[in-house]
Image (tube, rainbow, N blue to C red; front, side):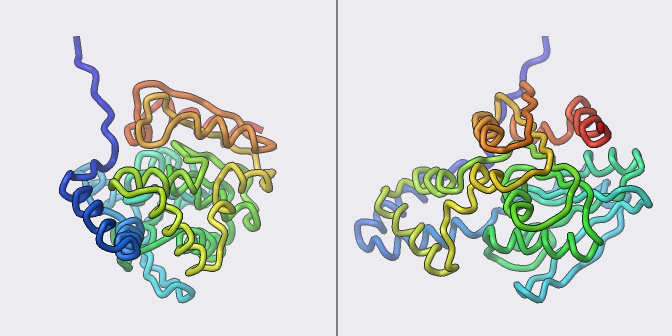
Length: 287
């Protein structure tokens, strides 16, 4: 019998980092908060798998400069005369992680675009945030002449929801492994590095003052209350990075959404599953 693969979380915090943060908090809570804010804003970069390298040969690559945020975005395009689809990857991910979805839709006649978000993959920048993610989606939507469909994975799904709550004319949205609560992301990070709730409150206040925003406004379960676009939320019951309950919560607050649950695919293998791909195409094509 084939041994079942385990689904590991995307990043395990090393013990030395937790010890460093605990000691730093004792010395200076302010410095601990600033250090945490820096690491929180800095995406990790991982080795690119061979399959993604091979997929690069089947698409056009173009760099797009976003003057509003001073960052050059790497885009990957599968050209077609059909309807347009934008694929948005998650935090510490890459656009080409969605190559299987991109190639499948391209074969079905769709014009597909994905990209490396700011400070991710081949795009420039060292630090990034939700505001830059949203601005990237907005810029690509404008320059491509408006996408018909948005497909977002994890943090990319959050950026799409926040863009679509005020802009965009997409016909449908599809998300995979979407989180529902921005504050919970902060909470999970602070807990993972061993800092206190006091530091959590300080870091949230720091970001809200720096960017003149209210953190909760970016939570998908709040953002979707202003979205009428039909939405499909796909989520695996064994997703250990983002709980499947998040999609349930988003659906409860969205006026026009449904949830499809898979089992045994985790947070990333779900992006290369044939059945999931068929569900995506069926949802796009259904009237």
